[in-house]
Length: 403
Length: 153
Image (cartoon, rainbow over the protein chains, first blue to last red):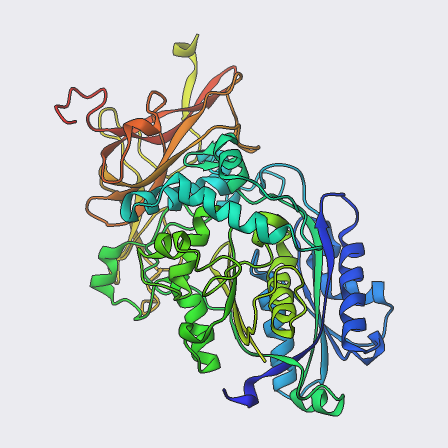
């Protein structure tokens, strides 16, 4: 693996996920302090703070980097704030990593936190007739679960996925999440309970759709040289790759919040951009940057916005071929103790989504896994992990973590 | 009552309301021929094209279901829901000619049990919501075999 592209993860920290409605800064601050303590560093050692933005908490959310910096106490650290919807955390990590790799700083703090309203996510307020996110609610009544359900139904018709499979994903993730002190939902559920929960967007039921949560997550990143000087050269987990890819033309899979895909006919006439479909390109760009392949991965954290979507990710991050995800699940390969555990944290299924924190939380979990600190949900001997996530409007997000 | 209300599109310039043959209104790039919906007016989606001039074109009125679902719970505002709320289906439909997938509500009488990937549907214009004076219209999909005297299924 090319060491010159790696940054060290010196510290990770989270504020547990839940639903309290408090100021998001409180969650981010707690996560940041945990990460700094885990790194054995002081806030004043941080030279660059990278915030993952939230659009739901007003102006302080839009300028989260500075908001968290002020909460920690103005130190003169340089700052960046990044919004990429669900992928905001990865974009914030990418910004910090680039600063470190460019030699512009040695130590960076990445923070994301959110407070979320109850129920379906709705667009930002006001009458905004040029915003597809506003229009899809107004003209179609298309919520986020609408899109998740379109993928789920297609998976059933193309690959023979069943409602039992989708329920089994929830059962698997709930079992893992029950052992995670940072998870919001810490109770095992049975397949019968999942299948008895109300249908929200056919074929997806209430217990199969990720909730909206409060939470915060943070990372302390450094150059590998700094890690060595800090006595963490041999033990630190590192990040050799971050993918923040956008789709390639033509994008032929319907994505939130769009009304339509690109036209495949136009591609033939006008010349497509070679490459894999968007969701598959996300992790594979990270693999390529890290000089590894999916066969090297020991553990994965993927964005299970719905139980069914987790199956799509098995294929898109390369754990199996297209159409084989159900077999992987049914064989127990992706459960704790299986060949390639997926979402040992419990996933969004056990956390609910705190948007700007979530991609950072995925990395926190992999760091704990690779350090052997994931008590009760440990993937034994894990040395390579990958995260995958996707943000509204065309934001890929994947981070490779190794030790 | 309803007959006296003025019928207006819920969004301007996205579809035509021609009696009998309504259609989505897309754009087609004059430089490279790329279609888009909703219409693009100042950029072409093709990354190898810098076209800035577009023709408005009616899109295929028929297509096949790429996938489908329904909305069992009332969507949040700015959706304007009927009271009491009546669940509806949503389909993503691949247009016959343009090979693009376009979302739309299904007409009210359709349930998920009436649909499958590949079901042929056609575009109609229907009421999305109404107030005291207006009916606000939107495009919806209707199975070709339902309400059109078709012999399918």
